[in-house]
Every structure is written in structure tokens, then in C-alpha cells.
Length: 597
Image (cartoon, rainbow, N blue to C red):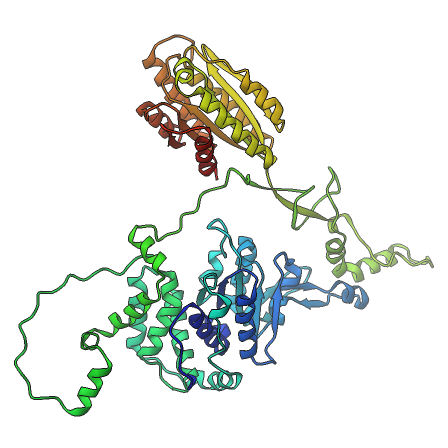
């Protein structure tokens, strides 16, 4: 460690320590997930890391949408065409062998891209088997994943997080909180030479595993990463053996940020009778006891390391864990964003595939030439043999139909929100005006997002499609304003109508979201007869059929008091239930928007 006094363990100090440990053993520690937006704090940390890495170590920045050929390597098209034989080109990961890769906006990496990077990190080599090539290139590197996520919907892929030792959060760090690095490049070089000699007692390994288990960290990789962090800390301090302090530091940096539960609290033991008086201790023992709390000295080693990890848990995380919210829940596909779909015409490019030039498909010229390049010598020989005796030369590049590579795209499908408004007598009496106001606000919100909206009203003996899916806000408001109230509640008929419309939307490649505004008190059966019991059974049956389609559904109970019928209906259609007994149009709109997000 540095001879200078070490500041208190704040977020920046821990991040600075992690930078030093990572510089000592980038490959063994896997890397760092750095949650921070672009700014002076993040720049200061990355500059500290650059200063600690030896200049001869390769350091590359990986853009977000890097192509597989550039990431893993492939055929060097120009060199292949020039040489007349396949010539391999190194990818970015192989170029960083022995160094560090900085991944920009890692929270937007696709699972497939993260899986390819993780496979290389596990194998320490790039296996290249494409374009007629079969190579194994060494690729031992550490990864810095820059995480600029704004909410829980965005996060660095778990496949990478499980292989990175440090999860750092610099969002709460201000520029004034930063300080100079705790180590120098010379110390890092010396630690790298010392690292192979550092030994770890088996007891420390058991302690780290026990601490991980107590904190609810179940991945087997994480205790091993903590062990490597402890060894790097010992090497930085110039020692040949890791100590309890190194294990405590590793627990703070590696285990604590991954805690998913609080350690079990031990029951307080009955106070023991005071021990008999002993002769006064020696002078040196008295000095030791002045430095450490006697209660801490009696604790087992595992408890002391666990206390160090618990001290690194942020206060907000402790509150979440105590409330049972340790695991970050993620909603399924967002109704606002729509589902992902792939196509050949528009969207974000995601690669190529072999295909035919038809139906507006776009040819990727470079990938087509890359596919044709390995076969040029054979094709030239075949062309010369076919034109034996002819003087003219064939084309310089022979491209055949099997070489065609079609560009693939990925885009989010449009979202169509279908509102089903209860305009029966009971709803008209209580909340129809508020429901109209809320639907108008929701329609305006959908219009801003360029989503499509549809409107179905049900009253009397059946349901009416007042507005087919459209982006016209004026038409939607006009249809809603002309909606009369009164009559029975044909709920089963309305649910069937919503299901049919949603399925037609789904068949067009869009993402439907159904929003019911009703009190759930059906009194008109499917066959048009009156009777609350039969109408309720038909409504529940229709709701279960809607649930089988998997369409995202929200049911807003608009009655003055929450109704059990509406709750049962929501359960049958597997919808999100929103009881809003005392809400105006704005509150209703806000609740539906948050439920659909």
C-alpha cells in the first residue's frame, strides 16, 4: 500500500482501490462494471486506470455496434483478393491480448454479443471458424464495461457481470470527492512480478465462500474473483501471503455490491457471569487491546470479514434488502416500446444472412465479396478450363448466387393500445365522465409516442368499435365525445371484441396492449340474455380466453369502491388490477401509464 494516509472508504476511494487491483491482474479479475455517465468523474477514474497500466499493454475502446468481423476477426477481404488465398484479419479482442478493452454503453449490448465476449473471456482465445478460416488466436484481456443506464430496464448483460470482479457506481461521486491515485505505475509493475508468489491460506478461501453465501451470492465465480482481488491486494503491499485485511477488502469490493440478502442475525446469548479476576496483563497486551475492540477480537474470522462486507453495503440497499426487495425485478416487454422483431427492410443492422435478392432485401456487398473471396482460385481455374483456348480473361472476381449475403435488421414493433370503455348505466352514473377524460389524456400520450390507439365501447346488448387502430387524435376524441352512457353491461361480448382486435393487431406485427375501464359487474350474457350469474360466468370464460393469448392487459376498476367482481375478472385475464375509487382523470391517466410501462 502507499505510505500516504489512506482516506476513509468512500465510493471514490473504493473505486480508486479497484482501479489499482485491476491494473495488477486485469485478466484474472475479469474487469470492472462502471456505472457513471460521461463526465469529469468518469474521465478521472479511466485516466487513473490508464496511468496505472503499463504503456506496452494494449488498450482499445469497443464501440457499441461493432460487427462480429471486427470483434472476433475474419477474412481480410482486400488482402485475400490481392493474394488469391484466404488471409485472416485479427479482431479487436485478439488485438487486446494482454491488455484492456473498454466497452462503451455496455448496458445496450445484445445478449448474443455479450455471450460471444464472455466465451472469449472464459477460453482466453478467439476460435475463428468462418469464411473458410479455422484459427485459434490468444485473447487474454480485462474488460471495463461503461454503464450509462438510466433505469432498471437497462443493465449490463448478466453474462458479463458474472465475469467482472468489480461493480462500481460513481453516480453519487462529485468532482470534489475525487483524489489522486493511491498507487503509481512502478508499484503496479512490482506487484505484477510479485503476484505469482502470493499464497492464500485455505482458511481465507473458506471465509470468502462463507461470506458470499451469507450475502446471498450464489455464483461460484464470484468467490474466486474475490480471492484474486485479495491476492492482488497482497501483491500491491509487497507481501507474499494474503491476510485477513486483504480478504476483508476483497469482500467489500467484490461481494458486497452483489448482496441479495442480509446475513442471518444471531440471537443474543445470555450474558455470561463475569470471569474471575486475573492478574494484570502484560504491557504489550494492553497496547493491543487499546487498538481493537475486545468484542471484535473474540469474533471468528468469517464474522470479521462479513462485517467488512456489510459496512460496504449502501444504506439504500440495506433498506431494500430489509424490505425484501433485494432482487431487482424487471418487467416484461414494455407496452410503450413494443416487442423486438427482425426483418430485411428497415431498422438497426444486426448482421447478414445468406439469401435471395427479392422482396426489397438489401445486398451487403462487403459480406458478399467476403463470402466469395476464398473460392476465387478455384473459380478462376474452372473458368479457364471452361474457356480453354480462349484468349480473353474472365472477370477478376467470380461471385455466384450462393455468395449473396442479405442485410438483417432489427426494430421495435409499433404499440397499439386498445381502450375498452364501460358505458353501461352503472358506469355512466359513477365514473364515465372521468373515464372519458382519462382516455383522452392517454390518447394524447399515445399520440406523442406515435403509437396507434383503438377504442371499443360496450353498453346495452353489445360492444361497438368506435375507433379502429389509428394515430388520429382528432378522430379518437370525436368518437369518445359522442359516446353515450346507459344500458346493460355486456362484458363478455366486450372482452371477445378486444381479443379479436388485439389478435388482428398482433398478426400485423404490432404489439397490442388492452386497457379495460369498467366496474366488472356484468349483467348481459354472450347470447344477449339478461342475468347477472350467467353474464359473470361468460365474462370470466372470455377473460380466460384473453389470458391465453398472452396480450398485456390492464383493468382499471372505476367503481366508487373496489369491486370483488372486477378483481376476479382481472385475475382471470391475468391483467394488472388498478382499483381507483377516488381518482380524477389525471390520476387515472397517470396510473394506467405507470402500469403499462
